Image (tube, helix red, strand yellow):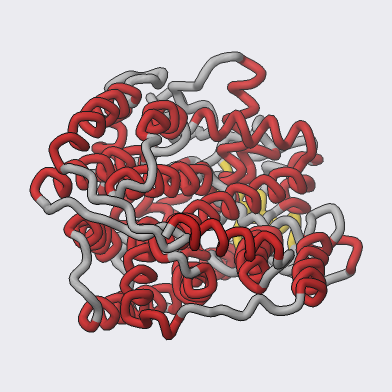
Length: 508
């Protein structure tokens, strides 16, 4: 057996660039293309970048709100400080282009680790690549925008890889979990999912039978004795839990996550916190993916207990909130691919290596596409928006520049939620009404924000907050724009295809 494995490996090495290499390169390069071609929307990104600027210049993590006039001085838990600092450092080094490049590398690393896990479990690189590209990636695209959560994706994938390899006897790298958790807890609140992965793996190993798995070379690993494997997992799992304390607020970070999940403003108003639905494309893709998984599981061999526990737990999370679909996709993909490999048997095992010259040419062509998509290159190609743009077209760059250039500016500016995030970065001297820190603002204020944007009770709400300036989104707040033009008492100072800026008469 060992001699045949070595012979097979030597043959593959001698074959040069094979079709397997093409499939792997295609997966990684196509994954990188998506974030490179996606402009940054004016939502979470800008206030995170502005907070990173504050941390870098002041040497302290802000704990009170200093961005808004409606919640100024109120306590604010800034959990993702390390991601914010990284964003600002990247911006200082290379601006938006470097941030987009690193975003592409982060996403590619995350799904590269997931692909590695699938290949290790099945020895089927082409099947793994095919299902990953056709099923998992479309499920995940909406979560690839630039924000701290995206930096958590490779950390989640690393946890899943390390724990699965340990459970199947394919690796012993549990010692990596505590340092990864120490990084994760300072980047995003999804660190609790890492703890969940450890807990589910431990529980399944404690109550389930020992498992075996094949390596990529086809060599069978002996099942690891159940109880001898639990000791190291318990030790490193406990150290991973202790690593959660390695953040500026200690145990307070757990209270932050609990309060965030219990915030009525977050769970009611934020679209990605709503359950997935077939009424939109993202929800339809999710339910089709679930149906595919169900069909494969129904006709394949019985999966391992750990796989089913993880599948069930993360499916429950995904059914409760669309933002959890990306994590479910990562957990479900190795199970889907390993079960599909079992169904196909030897019939699904590709053998052709192809022409090394042609294979290398194909990889080079894919690499050229990535080069053309680089944020330093694509603006020079004259591509139409949004593909050719670095920022989404509804980012109010020109409108905010006009606002800042005026000798007098409003004391209490009303604007769209996304505009608030950009104002925090581009006009830090202009306090905002709201921004995308949903949990900071009370539910009543969000209700007033929605009503005002829809043109309801305009006079009363403007008076309630003393609003003397309006920076409005044509797409989202057109009812308010119409109401202001009818009401009078306001002067339109600026307008473009996306934004209208009004000042109250007598203010400017």
